Length: 72
Image 1 (cartoon, rainbow, N blue to C red):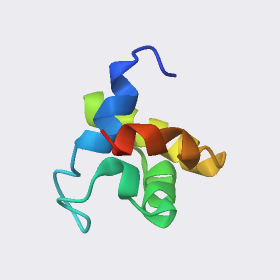
Image 2: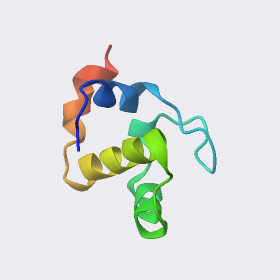
Image 3: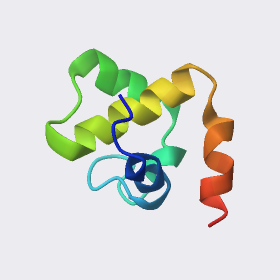
Image 4: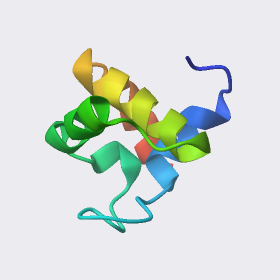
């Protein structure tokens, strides 16, 4: 899923552009919100890829991998 090393950086820099968590960094979205997308369907395009990626990271307990990126 991680075809691009820039993808991880975008997760800690990009904000959710709409909805209940508009303005929240993608990496800070709650797992419950990401689970809702997993059930209902992720958006098309880049945002969908990013949301699916952060969902997999959180689902598998890999949040710690983002810590060094968040500090930058």
